[in-house]
Length: 424
Image (cartoon, rainbow, N blue to C red; front, side, top):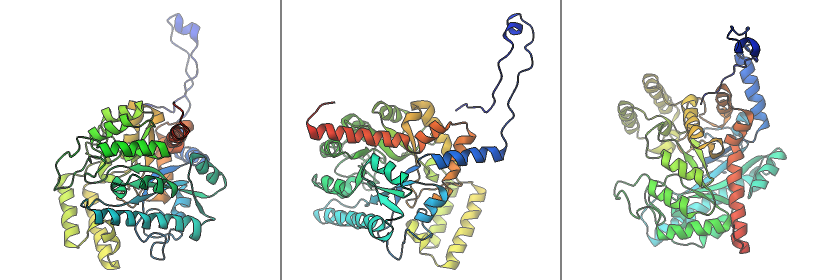
C-alpha cells in the first residue's frame, strides 16, 4: 500500500504553465521516530482494539491459570492492560474426534467447561476488571466504562454434534460467532486441513446439516465464522448466510501459500457478503518456515517429549531454558515472522477488498504470535507498524474493531428481521 508522509506545497501554477521551472516546493520533513511513536500511542489510546481469537485451556480461570495474574499465557488481564488490548474473544474450542454419540456428549461437556470458565472470570473472579458482552452495544458500553471486554466465540462446530438446539443454548451463554470447522471434517462442513485418515472432501463443501446450522445462526444472531473451512465450504457458507460472514483468524494466501489462508477468490466473496477477515498473527501462516527448520523443530520437540503448546509449558525450568536456547538458535538461522510480515497480509487484504473488510486477530494461546506481537502486552506494536505505513486513524480504527462491530451489528439486524418475521 503506497502511503507517504511527504506533504508538498502547491507549485506556482503560472510559472509551471509557461514551461518554466517551478519555484521551489516546500516538502515537510520526515517525522522523527519519536514523533511516529507519539502519534501511534495517541491513536492506540483513542481507538477500540478487538482481538477476535484468544484460546483458553480447560483449567482457565482457576488457581492454575488465573487470568488476573501476569503469567506464562499470551493473554491475561494485566497483559491486555499493558498492551492496550480492549476486547478479547475468548474461544470455546473443542478438538475433532470420531463422530459417535459418546464423543458428541463429551464435546458438549468440554464446551461447557470453557463456557463456565469465561463466566467465572467475568462474573466471580474479576467482575470489576472485565465484563462479558452480548452485543455490539455492550462492547462499546463496557469499554466506555473503563473495563476490559470479553466476548465468546466457538471454534469447531463439532461441539454442536448433530443437535441443532444447542445453538440456542450456546447463544444464551454468550456465543457471538461459531467457526464451523477446525482440523478435520465434521457433520457440518469440510475442513481446509483434513485429518490423515480422511479424504480431501467429505461433503463437497457445506453439508445439508451445515446449511441448517447457518440458517439457525442467522436467526439467533451468531456470526458465521468461515476460518478453517475448505475453499468450497467457505464459498458455500458465504452464499448461504443472510448475514455477512467473518473469518475470525485467517491470513492471505497470495502472501503465503498455506491451506489455512484464504485465496483472492475467497476474499472477494467475503467482501461481497459484506463480511470481514480478521488477519491472523500466526507465525507459520504469515510466513512458512523452510522445510529444514520445520524438520529441526520437529526433531527438537520429539527429543524433549513435547506435544502441543501445553507440552512446552509443562517443561521444568532447566529443560525449558534448554528448549528456548535451541529454538533461539533455529530462529537466528531462519528468522520467524514478525509484525512487518503480519502487516504485509493486512496490506494485501486492504488493496484487494478494501479497508472496510479487514480486521485483526492473534490466535494467542492457540499457536499465534509473531516477533513483536507475541502476547497481548505487545499489542501497541501493531498500531505502530500501521502508522509507519501511513494508515490514517480512521483506517486503523476500522482494522482494530470498527469493521468487526459493523458485521456484528449487521448479524444482529438480520436476527431481528428473522425473529420478527420481516424481510430485508
